[in-house]
Length: 220
Length: 242
Image (cartoon, rainbow over all chains, first blue to last red; front, side, top):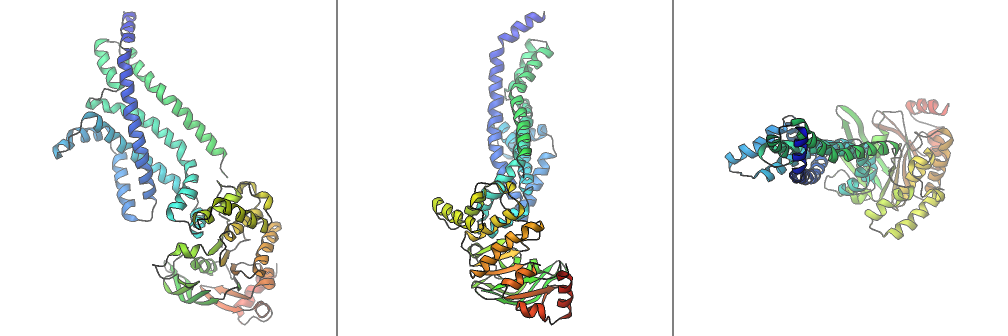
């Protein structure tokens, strides 16, 4: 019996590959946008301006303190009540970008705070602008602290992207749901789904570990 | 060059600078000493507004440091600041440390910056260390790179905040020698230090601070041989005895 399932599963492989592409597309777009926004917010969060600091801090706390499933329901089912209608794909991108930006903001802010205050004092004493201080002195040092957890966060976000299947985005998780209705062998079907996530995430996990070792070695 | 007029500063309720009156002329070398917590580091950090003052006037190189509207970047480019903890950029070589500000603030070309950088590195006796990272240098060498970093901007004033306090004793002299050479060239310098040998040799005046006030200021020979206040005598007996 299971041999028959396996044959049919192999025949559905192209369907899984389409789903995998969707997972990669949603993740890649959200991670890229989330990284940009996350760095921007993280830098703003370490500025002296209190308003920005509190606003960003409050938003990050709300997003980090609520389930992603609830967030994506709000974007897809509640926003239309306020006249904002989004298709499943842009809704997924919006929700995942926002989630990524919030986590990355915290990682970036922590990295910037890890750079000794004297570095900023030395840079500003020599007449560099705020932007130059950040660009040439603070960020290159902060990146050592930021990179390993940043890549680790990517892994978490790629896995979180499976949640977007609930609003009808045909990512690899939803392909699993649909397939298991035709091939009623859950272990086999979702084993394949899990394997596909693992194939994307494992190199990133290795990269994160490698960066961590490298950064630890290169400190003063 | 530097003029403090009734300057006050508070950290919370602590009155760290209490009605400071002080003038430093062009080419003058002023040494500031005093017990820890007396406000001497705060005093020197106010000069380039690493610390803002709350009351009074502070005029440096013709610019009003007490005025919030003053463009501090322009003034800071004219003032070299040497920290107790060196604060070299650990991700850059010595030469990159020295040439960053000239290229980004003075906007000179990389080629010019490198030749100016080599020149100041030679001057502090580290011409052979331009490609070393700070972590590969001794404390004394790091502090000399920090001095070179200040000098490469061709500043009008150099400020030193306890430049030898974080150094092992055998490295103190190599830093002091560089500073003495600078003083003899006529650089305007304010130096917070307890190195009284340095003060005797090159300072034009020595000031002593206590609880946020300048309690005595005099040329070194007077300051050391005939201190007026009891507190100066007490302080000198403590630091000169070892």
